[in-house]
Image (cartoon, rainbow, N blue to C red):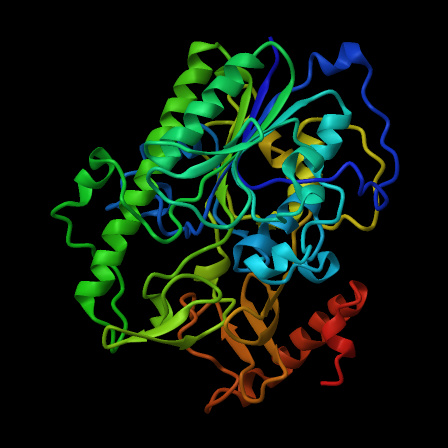
Length: 474
């Protein structure tokens, strides 16, 4: 009986884009049959705070929480960029946004003009090693035929190529044709995921399940998913100047959208139980990036808008932890000890190497793939400590901003290129909510040495990846 790896992020790859890694040597057929399977699950726009495992007592996420209770909870997991397309590209390739040429979400005009993912991805390597690969749900990494999931490492695709869709009665690509379907989008996606698992239960498979929820618009959702919040008065942060009624409604609707995903994750876990696959299944669940919903006086994520007085204002591009910290939980009953927690700093940049390590896939290593393999943590082993996580975000949709970030356990420095007086420095040990930017004010001098040290490390990293912003005549 093959093992199953249930994972939680987004995926893509192209058979025509093998150059960075070179040719990989596939596994012998007798070893392919014994490899674990993989199911990759990712939500869209779910902050770490929006899950029971991380202390939220108002949201209803029993199945997401179950994965953590029966496995390992990562308390310091990050996305290195705070919007969807570049974050998903990073996750699949182990490369930074500027290296991939995808630095903001891919807008429709960009997609029509040929922007898409051009790099080797881990699903491609799995397919080369005999896995049946599938993507169900959101893509958002190119609309041209060359970027279609079927050309990028997936033998099966059902979902949508763009960034958005209707939460109810969506239009999806099914067997190569666009069809209007009836029902809740999470329900329809998991119906297909269950069929995929049932069809491939006796062979190695790698399934990526990418929900659109809880991305705006949050609803409508089935009544059973919104019912827990009908009379809820959410105890959420209401920043100065914001309208409490608006913030609370946003959060009720946001919670309901997440619960619609959670209920369907439960259906998938039940299927694994029925097929007797659960014992040897790795379940990894996460989101593509974080979310704010009023925190820091903005809505949505790293490209969110200021909000005050019930009015939506201009963009406030950001790299706050609320926008980049993500849920990450892993279950693997034969390996991971239930109830394990780790504060090791990991990121979606690590996923390529982690998949290869967890599934013991031989591949030709390359400096083009960054990150580290954190799968030894599944086995109760230790890994080298990550001293700093580096991040990027270049906003060019509905605004302009060029952000670079270095984050350690205790400090964060964000450099705003092509903008004066916007740089940020936070003492995370004493200000975990990042409410006080210490680049200015009475304490700026106290941290000047640390700020200079972090900026130096940041620029060294930028040079190591040939960051184009350093050549932009700033």
